[in-house]
Image 1: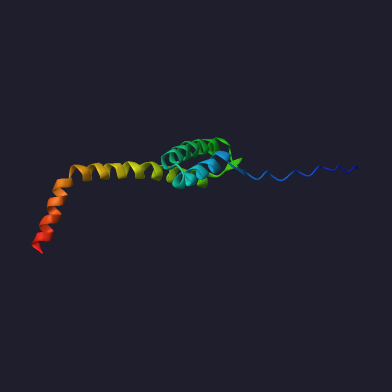
Image 2 (image 1 turned 60 degrees about the horizontal axis):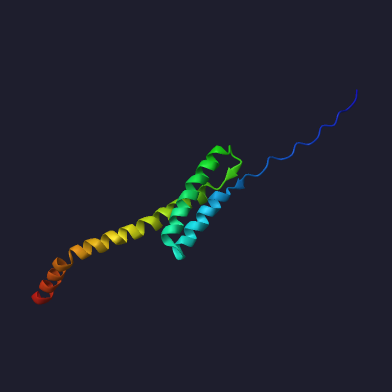
Length: 109
């Protein structure tokens, strides 16, 4: 009876982080300080692409949390300037009415 030696099976490869997820997070963080709207849009695009890539990789890629963080920061960076513009427009349209409210408060004291 001969003994056959079997080669050792290599351990399963560790899943790597998605480059798109890392790029999404970096773009969104950089967008907070350098180019708010552009960084946010780039972060959103890369984040959604990374989520799709990770989902389709069959477990060979990870980084879903980074992609989600990039998406959330990207939406914040896009929504805040839009919200600020809406507030400015509303205040500009209501300017005289707001001034009358404050003047009546001051004269009533």
